Amino acid sequence: EHKFWATQPVPQLGEGPPIDDGYIEPSKPREEVRQEPYPLPKDFEWSTLDINDPNQNKEVYDLLSLNYVEDDAAAFRFQYSSEFLAWALKPPGYHKEWHIGVRVSSNKKLVAFISGVPLTLRVRGKIIPVSEINYLCVHKKLRSKRLAPVLIKEVTRQCHLKGVFQAIYTAGVVIPTPVSVCRYYHRSLNIPKLVDTKFSYVPRNMTLARMVRVNKVPTSTSIPGIREIEEKDVVAVSDLFSRYMKRFDMAPLFSVDEIRHQFMSGKGRGSVGDGGPGRREGQVTWTYVVEDPQTNKIVDFFSFYSLPSTVIGNVKYPVLEAAYLFYYASETAIQPGTEEDGTLKKRLLSLIGDALVIANDAKFDVFNALTLMDNVPILSDLKFGVGDGFLNFYLYNWRTAPLAGLNPEGGVA
Ligand code: YNC
Ligand code: MG
Image 1 (cartoon, rainbow, N blue to C red):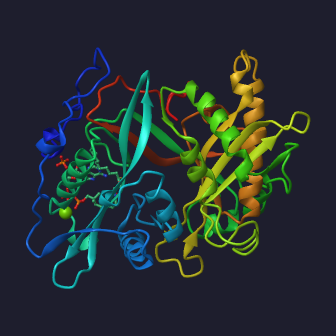
Image 2 (image 1 turned 90 degrees about the horizontal axis):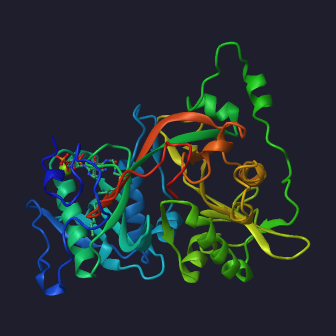
Image 3 (image 1 turned 180 degrees about the vertical axis):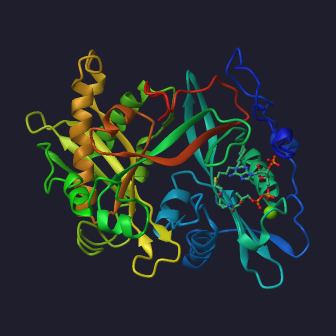
């Protein structure tokens, strides 16, 4: 059973679907919110992290790179970069109070962290301001001491103090109660390295050489008018994004400023090549638009981000460079009938196929995607293989019937 989660305003396991969508526990006026931080075990203290300060950003980076999420075999561990953390933790309207650390009182060492960022979320027909909770991490030496529930309660209190009473979060673990579950798929790009690091295996009846050949990616993109996003595209991308996202039962609503942040602010320093082939120094996100050569309208876009993993104990290849498919949209989906007649699938095969070309150019080893948005129908044609990881999606203090995820009909954005 779940001693902590049983006390929280989340649907409990085995509860039937609700009749109506809505909150579990009502919002409170600010003065009724607990005013003091939750108590920590002795020898520990709370600390708000200033992610603008390179030293504090580095402390979070160091904590996560040694103690954050690993795969089941403890072979790989996420290695979010400092630039990634700055991008993810400082969207428009972020609150520094939602970047919460725990330090050892005596030497001030950072040993735990949790964060929230504000987001407007649509769940079915309802639009709710939420906090997106991420980067919950407790140092390996302090595990199983019930510190995680204290971090969760403190971030909840800080959200309540800002008038936010709902949250969204994802986790590999199953706790009460997923609203959806998605599976990871992987498109191999650098076969020799993936095999050496045991990310992939050469199947029986296969050779390494044949595997390399089968997974070759074209050297150039296929869609006329595809190019990197620029400032002048932000309004058009914003408009396309919001219309495309109407396809899904759960999706964020991004303002123009949020679109600019999501798709422009992670482009890195200097020019392409400074960070190696096909990338800039500090580059976190890659966003491309398709400008129709006839009309000069933006008709599609896609984005992916860089999230490397430490290859635990591999001297030759200490880091696996992974790209993750992020948001995309296509005008094709907005025309009636294009889903039924296969036009949408065809367009997405070209679009995400071009994303693979760009990721391969930028020397990523693998390109990952989840079974959400319109991904499912294109994954096998694009030579993605099914992974062993799942990602559970959760809502805090909100009831709704389960959302499609693994379901090929899509559903979650
Ligand atoms: C988890 N990932 O079930 P019960 S994902 C939520 N999310 O409680 P202890 C989790 N709860 O079952 P440890 C969780 N993992 O008894 C564990 N729990 O009710 C629950 N790993 O606490 C667990 N990062 O401190 C149990 O466990 C209780 O020392 C046990 O710490 C857990 O960021 C953890 O995977 C995860 O660093 C910190 O294992 C630690 O093991 C660790 O004894 C590696 O805790 C890194 C890792 C998690 C990544 C993520 C999303 C987090 C969402 C948190 C929930 C947010 C709710 C909404 C709040 C705002 C509300 C508003 C408004
Ligand atoms: Mg603990």
